[in-house]
Image 1 (cartoon, one colour):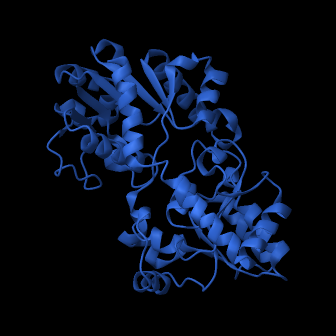
Image 2 (spheres, rainbow, N blue to C red):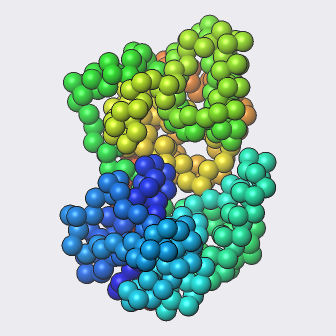
Image 3 (cartoon, rainbow, N blue to C red):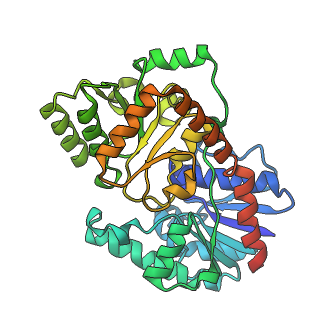
Length: 383
């Protein structure tokens, strides 16, 4: 088969959808070398090195007009290039497909990561909601198959858009293989010194937005400040919500206890911006604290389990799908239970070791190989 991809994110997004795209394409090319993989991208960058694969090629805008208007090329004019290259299956990796894809002669697949803009519309501007909804509904209607990042996303697609269940396939993704390697003490000490990490700390990894609920982790610290005043290290940035969190920390005299790594000068270096240093940070924390009220998958949970890091997570949306029995759970907003779990982790070595073992056992269910195999089954079913 000749399989094409919307590869904009693979070349332009350093995290999130970019990691998903690069991991899946590389996994497919390695596991199924008998097929040819064509990446359709507005531009090529150094974020994705495909030179090690002989079965991957890249198609960029060819005409002067398309090079001048790459967004328009990706949105619709790419269909001619898909047809011209004899693509059998075209996969939209980030919630959308080119307009007119059904005229290309290729079968089409779309990955839907989440419907957060439908469940929490107040977190998006009206124009954003309208654009996301229009693109996703159009893509889901014409796609021959839909890949959902989780069972939660599948149920949301059925509930919001009335899509037939047999058209939706749940394909669990993996995280970066960087997290699968245990770092030695010398490497971890280098990272500790580089980012000025405390001897003990809890870890929060996510953008600082209302839905991610960093404020709840901070409220838990308030409850613990007299019994277990352990710092919280934050990997992630934000605007309005971050300022609200900082105001809360100052009011409760906790501003010294929460460390925002994104504010360090070192955060501008390659090891941080590419996430290459993250495993060394994960592997020194006491636990990952994940109070999010809703996710499409929850990659930091998987990164933590591979890192041998205990997980304390809210029990909302798809998060229990990822961690199973390998986490301590609390209901969204229940900061008392969250604080109690953090206190247990700070004192119970046996619990820590048990969660580490269970987490690693759980993590092996989410590998690049398994992800590629599940996606290839979808391709084969519609081809």
